[in-house]
Structures are given as structure tokens and as C-alpha cells.
Length: 384
Image (cartoon, rainbow, N blue to C red; front, side, top):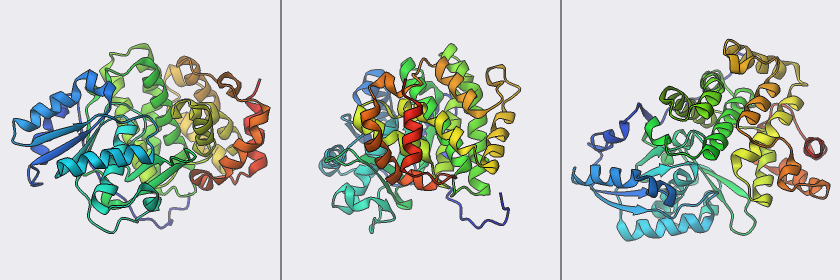
């Protein structure tokens, strides 16, 4: 990479990492003039008890709380509006996203509408909020999206489920709490799907057309942490060191996204998620090896991928000659399907999926330009 590449860094949020750091939230809010906090989460996290624990910690420190727990996977415009209604009723001074990427995306989306009005489609793109926004805290309970380190909310349009990336520097989290203890409640499938998503983030940001020397530092370290920890956390769910590495790796990958962009694995996975109602991580996992193989036809990208593989070669779980082989191995360890036909995709779907994939925003940052025919070939190669 040309070391003279011009770039500007995005450095939010403050990261607070360590087991048990959830208890630090009240002291971290000191100085922000916070009297009312809206906690945005989902029903599963409510059952785990984390929102209640946080609410008790805040209220004993004089901060009144309300909890919005109706977050759903792949949040839509309606989900954002419903959360904003809760904010209007409660009038918080701070919004806290507690949960997986969907909870944090909903919290960010709520912040847009509550502070600036309108609807989410008004903020599709970047920098479209004209008014100040509330301070935001993000507390991930998964190790995947890296949303805690991004200013974007990913929200699906109600009418066609197309994902909109709605970003603004004013909506970046002020603080991200990375407490690996909070990831212990994840089911195996969530650990697997979010982990694969984080791995894809690290790989795609490393070779993105928007990558910079700064973003690649985070992408490379994210990959190193995630690639080595992922098999361990699958085999030993209680392994706190592996949990911590996964959570830190996901956050670093999020910082890389914020300072660069993604690529065609996400661009080709989004149409699958929209049409076949499967998790984002599963869709990205199935497409990632195919995109790696296609991008590897470019010599420079091939060398970049080899550099990632060599960075983890000392780990017995990562002894592979190529990046696509490493990823396919990790997918098998997670019991995740490698073929699109396993989720109901057939030849009749290919043309429409490929046309959609080409128009996805993330596809435009792929290091190799891919057209409809390229996407058709990649999808078709994943059919039995």
C-alpha cells in the first residue's frame, strides 16, 4: 500500500475493556450531566438480567432509567420509530445500546429520529443530521458487528427490507464498554454467527478500496485476535481469554469499518439475508470464501490475504495455505453451511440476487470490481 495515502482518522469511542466493566458505567457518565438514561435492548438480553443490573447501578447513583426491550434482529424503520416514541415519552439525557448489533443499531436509529425528527430514510448516507444528538453508550453482549465502534446504524427499509447505512459522526458512541462476561450468555449459534461476521469485517476492511494505513492496523489485529480465538471459544464457551479476544477483535474490526469500508462478501450476503430470512453472519460466512477466491485473482490482494494467513500460522487451528481454506475450516468448526442450496437458494434465484448484490453500497468498495456476471458465477458456484 502507498504510505503517502491521505486520510483522516475517526477515533471515537472511548473503549473501556475488561471483565466486570459493566459496573463502571455510572462513574463514566459523571460529567455528562445525565439524569435520565434510556436503555435499548431486546427480550433475550432482558432474560439474561443485564439491563436490570445496569438499571440498578445507575439508579443507585441518581440516574433514572427506562428500558426499551423490543429490539429485533435486522431492525426496520418501524423498529426505529417505535424506539423513538419511547424516547419521546421518557426524554432521556443519554441513550445506552445494550445487546447485539441490532440493539445498538436501534439505539443509534432512535437517536437520529428523537433528536433530528423525520424518518430513517432521511438519514440514509452520511452526515445528514443537522442538529446535535444525545450522547450514546454502547455495551455489546456479542462479539460480531463492531457496531459499538461505528457511527452507522444499519436499518432495513420496511417496503423491501433493503439495508440502509445511516451514519453521522455525531452519532458515534462516546463510550464502548467491552465486558467479556456479558458474552457468556450467548447461545452457540449466536457465538458462531457473530464471530464469522467479525472475521469477515476484519478481512474486508483490510483490502477495501477505502482502506488506509490507519484502518489496516485495526483490521490486521482484529483478524489475528479473531482467527485464533474463534475455534477456542467454540470448543470452550467458558474460556474468558478467548471471549475477551473475540470481543476486542470485533471492536477493532468495527474501528476498521469506521475508518474504511467493507466489500463484496457483505454486498452479496445482504440480498440473501433479505430474501431468505437467515442471520447476517450465516449469509456472510457462506459468501466470504467465494469472494476471497475471486479477489485473490488480483496479485496485490492475494499477497494481502497471505499476510493475514501468515500472521496466525503459528496457531494449530490456523495452519492453512490460503485464507479461503482457513475461513472454510472455521465455518465447519461452527457447523455452519458452506452451500447456498442448504438454505433454499436455487438457480432460479441467481439473476435477481446478483442484480441486487451489484447495487449494494459495500460492493462498491471491493478491491476487485465485480459486475452482475461475477456475482452470478459466485452464487452459482455455491449451489449443489
